[in-house]
Image 1 (tube, rainbow, N blue to C red):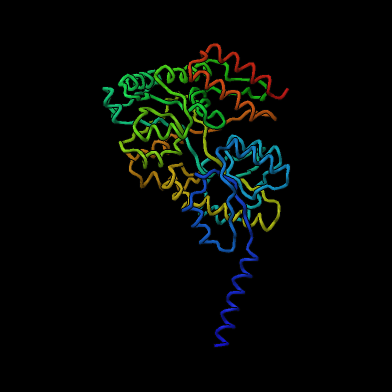
Image 2 (image 1 turned 135 degrees about the vertical axis):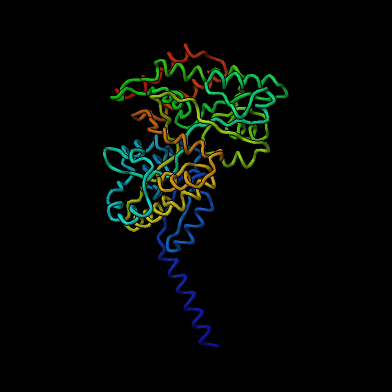
Length: 407
């Protein structure tokens, strides 16, 4: 009996000792980037690492603001899931660790399990600072019941912005508090505005980063599209309210991120169809989503952080991420598997196909980068609520943004 008690105590002390020596990795991310299924799988596979998730951020601008504060206070996390548009700012502030040495030491893992969907999304100054984790593109969601009630065919959805806005207006005209369409203008980093701009081949900045470039015909067209939705019956509301309204069958056409597709499909009581936004021959779509970046400075934490990053970037975890959220994998091997096995009619495949036309998600340079985003969002809201017209807005927005750029 005594021997059994001693043995049990030894086991308990061994477990306590093991836990005491576990390396802790703190992660800062949005809730959608760290679903419980994926986190539980990592913890099960790597009990030697104590994973701590900090309170989730609301978007990448929120993450960046928290990160800058943590940098000042010396309380940085070990891994962040940073938006592609803010990864450059993270590098400029010297908050991220280059990953080249880790990748070089893990060539076998790269050869077997990892091919970045795009090598450029997390590269700055010719150095890799992150692993592309997920990719999203703006897509159009259609409530097929409302499309039919408006007299249109869900099998032949509109192809131009004018046709899309006309369908939205017909749905609004059905009455019963229906909202024909909603353009998600308040997306982080002015992402949807940039998507319409980039889809025509336009850019937000000059090549030298000193002058506004959205004040040409492409920028005017983007503002015109926002106004089209407003005139078709858009009602201004917060994003959570928009998704609830769409899922309940009130909104007919919704333009937002493909990353919300899984939850919208689950909540909707009607058939949802998806379509890529109109894109020109020389256009591209800004890649939404994020790259995993290492911010740990302690060697032991860096080693554990890299273990976590490899797990999350692996094809198995990436497939689970797609099934859980609908985000396109940042690992090309997982994308290739989806293209082979998924039903072409699966509405999630719209984003997979559209991601082939994805590219840089630009951000404004300098210390006022986040402030500029807020200024543009404010002007977009004014157009979306018909308080200003595009002609007036483009002039005011250009002047305000130009004054905030580095000189």
